[in-house]
View: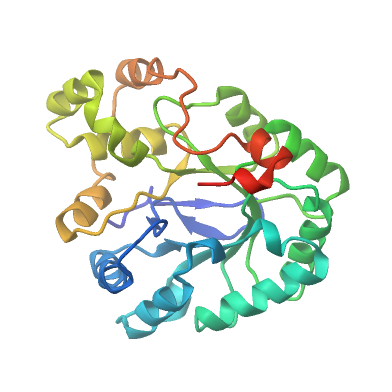
Length: 281
């Protein structure tokens, strides 16, 4: 899994693995723990969670019981909507790192755009300056949300984690983030299994003698987007990591991008900003 293309240098100089392990919506926490341990054995060094997921203690335990040191893992967490605001965010961070059995995070994100984003961002900036987080960023932010945040920010976000897959490319957002050196990262890159039903992806996978998962995750990387697929089976976890030893042609990249029709698996960030009570990720 390791080679010269498996990480990105963020805008503050921190190195982040391009492939992460997603942990959202894991109903069986014991199985999740085993999956995280397996992912670490395979070579994953980037684990993504959020306070909203309710699995921080399991993840902390899995890392603690693994054969690698904490500083070899790029650990990501997110502050939830109800935890936003300066003091509330600082307290939420303390609770999260306690559950994760760590004294720092590699990346801390605002989970969704909310009216208190500016105050929350000030808290993230303080955590960064005080050395408790190595990088800070946002999740599910549109261009307008980013513009409003950047206007008052002392520190530029390093990451914007968004829903990204062949049917939701958001090219204007890609261009905006490139302009400001904000790394994009894909959640739900496999559309929660939806990619397996797309005929074009079936054809491309056959052409390259790869699985559809590998084609889509490789497409993410070549689009310049880090990616965090989720799986609980050992074979699929291994399969998802085997994406660094082949390349999709420019022509096929373009064909895959043509699948873009604005379809969302999750919520529209603008709707969540206006009515946070409707949230479901």
